[in-house]
Image 1 (cartoon, rainbow, N blue to C red):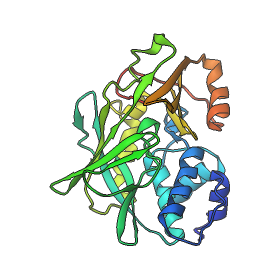
Image 2: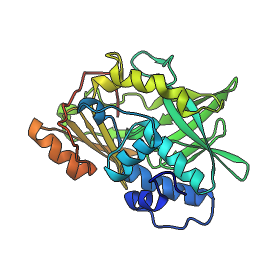
Image 3: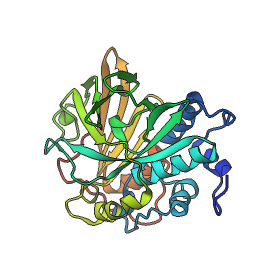
Amino acid sequence: MLRGNMNLEEYFARTGYNGSLEKQDLETLTDIFQHHIRAVPFENLSIHCGEKITLELEHVYNKIVRKKRGGWCMENNQLLAWVLKCLGYDASFLGAYVFNPHQNMYATLMTHLLVKVVIDGKAYIVDGGFGVSYQMWQPMELVSGKDQPQAPGVFRFTEKNAIWYLEKMRRKQYIPNQNFSSSDLLEKKECRKVYMFSLEPRTVEDFRFQCTYLQTSPDSLFTQKSICTLQTTDGFRALIGWTLTETTYNYKENMDLVEFVTLEDEEVEKTLKEKFNITLERKLVPVNVKGLYTI
């Protein structure tokens, strides 16, 4: 269970999980997973406060567990896979190509790291690194054409020629502050493609170039927006640049509540602490280039 100075007890203290660890079943996996996504934000703040994101597992562990930060998919899912393997789960990495709604196409670069877990011969996708409303709340059974309803909405995998596609159907949205009703952060389509992937096994090494590219290229979504998002027990919060959104799933019949507020510079640090439990070591410079990203 140990790797250097890493240990499961400390990780579970970070996520607040104190359930059973004896069975490697779906119920335990789901519980561990939900504690992770509600404690560990999906965030790229390092890019916007002068830090470098690296893929070394010990560094990821130190950042998320000890410094109580979050991370992006290559950090969150790598740490999750380590935890699951330590517990005896059959966990491995896959690589996905994220859908870009503004270009209406999938990325040509494999930038999204996923975890595949096999339990009693059945395969599941465990993805704790996507954030906002596209963040699954439960492991998804790897089966084609089956609607898998969860609190965030209805997810579905479709397989075609050995390529798997994830899409999500959302509810209607109620936005009390009408100044934000046409915000570029709001997803307009009710059914949204999320990413595509094959079942070819991947390693962390397959993501070295992408990790550098995503945090340095001016064309990268992650250099154009500072993002911090955390799942809650009834929805999620997101801070994109200076815009704070809080979404409550299914607050009325087939309706999600989406609340917006624009922060002043001096409110950002306090909000990160109060809403996301994040304290940065360096000064954050919020960024939000319009377009490119929907919650």
